[in-house]
Length: 262
Image (tube, rainbow, N blue to C red; front, top):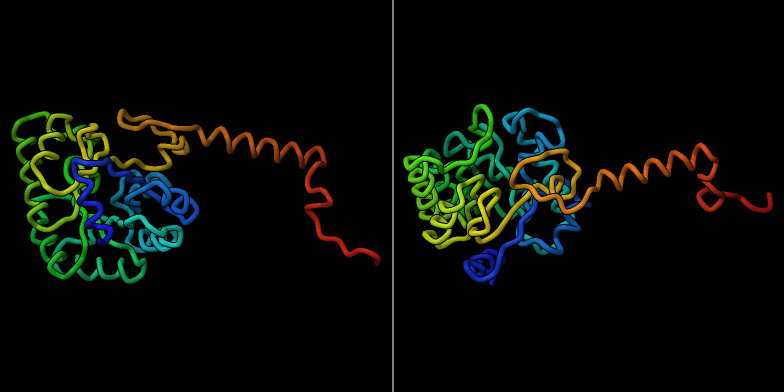
């Protein structure tokens, strides 16, 4: 049984754990606890201070993914395909193959439903593993982000998109900022795992940006729970380092290289 078959068996049985990673050191920690590690195009705002994910390039995704892959032994590695890299079948296939060949990842993730369904089918037909993504779509969003599923027409569209994605052959679907009852309906209606971010406990699994989870990224949004304040830990370490230097307590002899008996 491969990793994807094991993931599918978790549907309605045990929760799926997912987190983002952008480097080997973080990935090597996450790999002990995660089913899926995503190299998200969220790195644009988290690491590069971009206003949106639209400025993230394919090369950025590839270089970070190469680093992350070095820290992974068991988790499924998924890489976001950035904005304007899957506008048609040939472009999508060429870029997906480039990502997979250079990073050795297990799958790619694309945002959208009906609008890109033929592209996803084409990728799957060409043996590319794809993770779907519906609800809030950062690559398409204009203005302030808001949760999805307030109105009936929007709810029906998101549900239909999820069903289309399942029929196209994706192995799982991210539900981002989807209203609670709609997230439950989708999770019950599709036979593949749903991974929520701001989409309630009804999803088969959950994903967060690890920098948000550990308090490194100064973000305050409803769906993020901060499990520690790593900023405080880092500040204390740097403060003590600076004090040691000023007080001539670092480096000591044990931190230096000496030739004895000269």
